[in-house]
Amino acid sequence: MNETIKTILTRRSIRKYKPEQFPAEILQQILEAGLYAPSAMGRQPWHVVVVRGLDKIAEVNREVKAATARMKDNPYADYVGSESYTVNYHAPTFVIVSGDTTVSPRNAQFDCALLLGNMFLAAHSLRIGSCWINQLNVLNDEPVFRKYMTKLGIPKENQIFGCACFGYADAPNPTAVARKKNAVVIIE
Image (tube, rainbow, N blue to C red; front, side, top):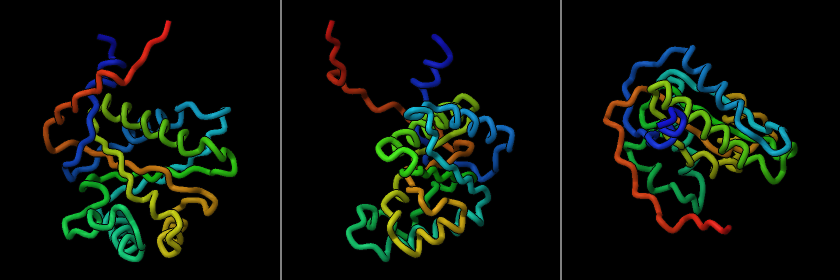
C-alpha cells in the first residue's frame, strides 16, 4: 500500500499523551506540512499559534474553563466544566489555528481545517499523536477570552477555527470507527 494512503487510513485521534515533549525539528516538519495545505485562491488566511510546555498550556486551560463558565448557551459548558477537563488531553504541544475572514470571507474556516488536516497526517507519519479540539471556536466573541487570545498572538481580526494537541501517544492507536457505506455516490 502507498505510504500516504497508509498514513491516511491509520491516523486516529489520540486522547492520552505521555508528558515528554517531542523535538522542535519534528514540530517544524508538522507546521511546514500544514502551511502547504491548499487554500482558496492561494490566500492562506491562516495564523498558527503554538503553545508548548505544560505550565503555559495549563494557563490556556484555565482561561478556556473560565470563559466557558462566563458564556450562556455554550455547547461545551458541561464538558469543560468538569474538574477533570483539560483542553489538550495533557499533550505537551497545543496549536491554535485562526483565520482572517477579511482576506477570505467565505473560505477561511475551510482553509484552516485543511491546514490542520495536513498537520494531523504529518504528525502521524512522524509517530506523533494528535487530536482535533473544537472548544475554542465557540469562545471567539467572549471578550475576556478574546483579549487573552490576542495576548497569545492571535490577530484581533482573526477567528479561531480549530485547535490541535500533539504529543507521544500513551495508549494504543484506537480502532477505527466503521465508515458509512452509503456516503459516496458515483455517477458515470
